[in-house]
Amino acid sequence: MRAIIDLASSRILGTEATPDVGQSSVVNGKYVFPIPEGAAVVVDSSTVVFPQANPNSLTTQAAGELLVRYPMFSNILYNALVEDTDVAAFDLTATGPGGIISRAMIGRAPPGVPPQPGISPNNTVILSQNNGATTPRPGCLVTDAITSIPGADEAMLWWNVAFLDTTEDVNHGYLTTAGVDTPAYRTLTETDQEPAGLTVYLSNDNGTTWVEATRLIPTDLSATGFGDTKATASATVAASPSTAALTIGGVALTNAGGPRTSGGNDYNGSAGSIAAIAADIINAINDPNNSFASLCTAASGGGGLINLTAVPLGALGNAITLASSNVSITVSGANFAGGTNADFKIAFVNTSPNRVYLLAYALLW
Image 1 (cartoon, one colour):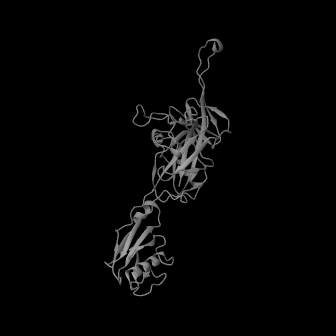
Image 2: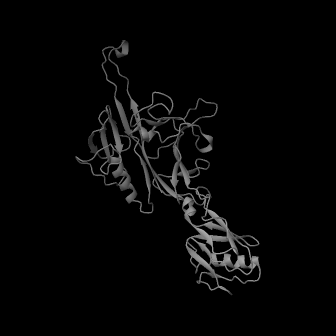
Image 3: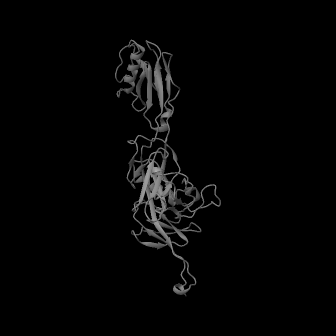
């Protein structure tokens, strides 16, 4: 399904079924708003294009309906490419996978190069590959970093692309065009959504590492070892015996005064040495029968040092509190620290001889 929008007024002219691949439509004075497959978007007298935050807008409905169909994800960023803030989401100075330079058009000048207000919908273009260069240069369009996404180690992409062409406007002629009066027609041709030559990549470390993504297939980013940085902290056993209660995320690990009990959230503060007490605390924190499995894991740093790593991904781990009841155990701070969220980027790379027009895209995580 797609909606047809008047270019001048952004009034919804109507809806129609998504054409078959290869079918062309004249789009003079209007543009196409693609609706994701299966999304139950309602278009009636209350439906609008702007403001996009309106619950009845095409963008809000399309994003919500797409997310509903993939319940393994909780969040969505949906870019309909219909206003200037939408195309401002691209970084035309960025490099893509393998250092490919940006080669694209967004319907207006880059930021800082006047004139630049506004947008021409359906005119965001991933250029064709330039085979005339010494080294062929693909078309490439890269988004800005999409930040503040805690805990995202799996994501999924949806996009809609098409081919567009504009004929010549002939209103006079000479020889072969004598007597011809033909207006310019702008046509949009439906294409396979993964056309030959178009490859889409996803990064969750701000473009340092890229993984090829398949449309509407989840991409597991955790196995590659990049993306979120987990928060860390440390505790140090400073005396033997130890009588302190070590409290992590509001859960207290107390001195048992003897051998610890699995499931009792306690440790042996009289294990005989600072290193032995630290080892017992590590075992207690890592014991699945205790209450720390959702908070952190522990590892030895040597001697009395206990290194703690948050279980929650990214900046979520920074909220875990840490405290000791007395000086027999010292802590690195009142909270875990250093957890950072993934900075996602999407790169569209075109190695075909055809320009590919990007009409909309979405990131689910």
